[in-house]
Amino acid sequence: MARILIIEKEGATRTALQHLLERDGHGVVHANGLEDACRQKPGEFALVICDVALAGEHAKPVLEASHPAPVILLADPPSLHGAIACLKAGAADYLPRPFDQEAFARSVREALALPRNDDAPSPSSRPSSHSGATGSQVEMIGHCRAMQQVYTRIRKVAPADVTVLVLGESGTGKELVARAIHRQSGRHQAPLICVNCAAIPETLIESELFGHEKGAFTGATNSRTGLIEAADGGTLFLDEIGELPLDAQARLLRVLQEGEIRRVGAIETRHVDVRLIAATHRDLHRLSATGEFRLDLYYRLNVMEIDLPALRERGDDVLELAEHLLKGIARRHAREGMRLSQRARQEIHQYGWPGNVRELENALERGVILADRRIIAPEDLGLRAEHVLRSDTADGRPQEPLAHQPPPVTSAPRPQAEGASPARETAPPRPAPPLANPTPEEEDLSLEDYFQHFVLEHQDHMSETELARRLGISRKNLWERRQRLGIPRKKARRGSATS
Ligand SMILES: Nc1ncnc2c1ncn2[C@@H]1O[C@H](COP(=O)(O)OP(=O)(O)OP(=O)(O)O)[C@@H](O)[C@H]1O
Image 1 (cartoon, protein in one colour):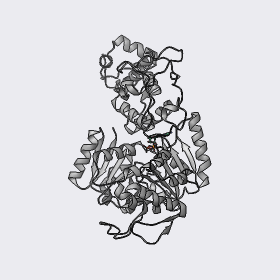
Image 2 (cartoon, helix red, strand yellow; image 1 turned 180 degrees about the vertical axis):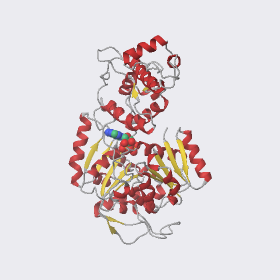
Image 3 (cartoon, protein in one colour; image 1 turned 90 degrees about the horizontal axis):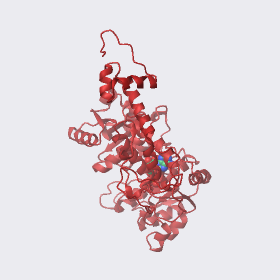
Image 4 (cartoon, helix red, strand yellow; image 1 turned 60 degrees about the vertical axis):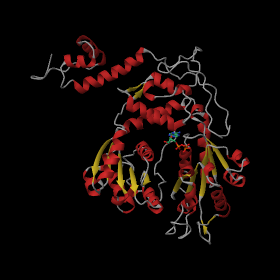
């Protein structure tokens, strides 16, 4: 549950946005314009959503006022120039209106997931060309051997200014790799433009990527710069490149071969200096055999390859990632200090994660929202039984099926993305996590945490009898626990409730 500020003049739109946000459990505050918003201290909100018309030039005024809160801009009518300017200035997202509910919810989720650095300079002091398409710099977590190889590869290819092909299942962090390469390259002062080829309609992709001249097609009332030109001097990240239509593939090949771009409807070409990083979860070589992907483009792209392991192949990294992600998610929902129970950790370790890190983030967010107390139980994560990878415990005993899941839990086949390359040997079934067996102590520990928190929070205004009743224990038990935990009963103030 995050506190979100909506800056929007239009009453009906405001109500519709509020409805969508409240449905997802967020708290909403309104402002009619920037001045009104500034009085509400926008930087203290978890997120600011602003009509681009009220955001000031290139959204800089709203971004400055809202720092360090992320800002989503809603644009009607949208423009490519506007989008690039706003994103370069540091907006978390730029949503063209009308948008569907799912796109809006996703954008809110992603903006709330951005790391919030209160010490970072505000957008006004950041060089505007420095930030990427979403302005975020997420640290990559994980120490397993496969990830170490990934980091080494990134370090070696980053300064080499060559085209890079990043392979990996959906949600493994391909965009993070692209960001890391850009950051460590000589182009880091120039823009990084990220484009998901699968998200742009086939009819628009050429004009979006390559730009168009006025009159090039019906509706082209002005000439427009494409995203490739916008990345001039910097890096272009083309995610899901396997989805690029064949005509666009031919144009892209020309950009790579000649360093030249021809806008749709243009006669002359322009020179561009762009480093390309492409990513896909598909086997491009296999696609080229069926004519869906140009073989010559595949060879041009595949100068350097970085192969990201699936999350289920990263051993204990999954727990390190879970702890790291949990902190950010809990902070966003104002539930700091939330922890995973031993059983939840065990389940996270044993799960197959077909949706990889993105799925882990979603499960943790569910956990943070659904957990009644500060400990997240396996039930709160809502993982699907069919993706639990069965393995033996460290002492060789078969793993007990997880209590809340419908038995039997069988050895699930490791899910393989459609068309994905059988790039890497998969790791053997994971041993049980390096944890003590889940025992009553663990639940006890969480109860003690809760007990301590509850007592400290309420002892000033509740009598001992009421505290004990609310905790569901006897007064004697309350006294004993106070002794054990070192929170002795406060001396009753004259006139305050005692029992
Ligand atoms: N090693 C990691 N450490 C921290 N966060 C990670 C890591 N890998 C992925 N993530 C997070 O997981 C989410 C998905 O990552 P990303 O978008 O880079 O994946 P992707 O492979 O590009 O997915 P898709 O192919 O579906 O676009 C992001 O929120 C990202 O920050």
